Length: 214
Image (cartoon, rainbow, N blue to C red; front, side, top):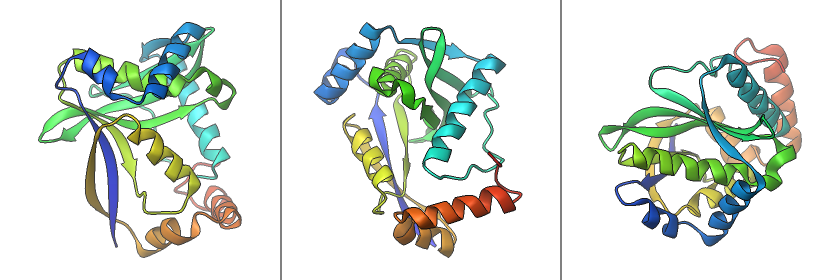
């Protein structure tokens, strides 16, 4: 089954001041608040930090009843890195970034991201998005892919994510991917029903060898 997916690309081929002026003013306020509150950036390859980020990732997916495939690991390669938002010496949010073929060249792409809900008021997500933009702009990359999904759904979670990424005023890129009919039908028509999400989550995390049990 053909599924149309949308992602947001940040065009990094300009100066940082112009990139800053392009984003939604509320996002700029969020970034300033995060820095003022003491949130800092850590680029890490330490196993302890990788484990801490994976734990945040699992908790977030459990909250939204999203089963996690066993193949979703956080092993860093030479073409990936872990951006962590740190507060009081604790990782509160992260983005795992990998180099991917974007516009015919290797450019950074958000692969996984998650936040500890207890610290959402510190705006670590907006902080990390901006730090990623600044970092990859300084390193001479042309685009930053914020990651995408099948947004032609009534799922409130995906709609909020889509609206948030659009506030960064990037370029919309649409591509087609293949999904099984069941996966397409579930995402498009059934995922919005909480009871069905609970049933699917319970079955896959308890009776399938493909998914983590957590």
